[in-house]
Image (spheres, helix red, strand yellow):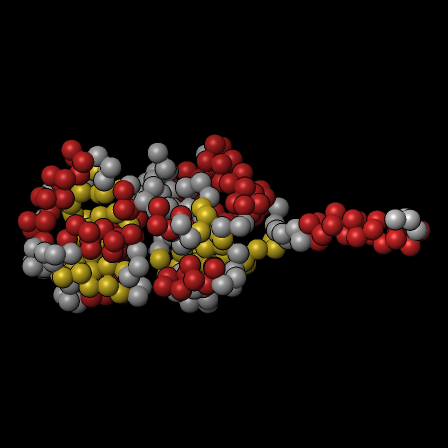
Length: 282
């Protein structure tokens, strides 16, 4: 075959197109949208003026500064958080999303930035007495410690009603360990569980310890933390920012900023500012 000038140019242009195409398809990370609930204090909450504030908004602000991108934070109900991410409504989710094997099948995570554990809260008028182990952390991966701890609580919650936010790791925990002995009542939002606890419609609430602590502080002495604090296993290995599976470049960019914040103490300072205690991942 004779290679004419026309054929040569056509082939060269086609080859050049193949080289340029990946660059044209490169992910633009200069402006990102993060979704959060805006109703999960002190991680995130919405002010009367509509501004979303809290630990995670402060963290995203610092991450953006270090990683060099513009951003906005939008409100999204918890139930639609991951579906909205997969549909491309936003670039990442930051809402105390715990890293679990089940979620890792669907989305990718950054390094964890906090691990407060999960626990229980009751009120003065609750039919559930004080649970054993208050202030003691138990890893669900340690069978020797977790089994007797769970059994000791199971005896006291049998026949009771426990409130929990729907589609959460705490809901998974309750279903797995107490689903056959107690009534598990789920709610669309975390604040709804506390409303019903105050109203006496549930005997106890399970949630992330930082949220329980925030509730106790605003309960005017009516609420009290009780029982063991559980972590790992079905409860995950800490909270992280979630993104789509193919967003590996974004994952690396966020990880670099998060890891630097952990290393220089900035992350710990933000955690203590909003939670009053150090809940850094171990």
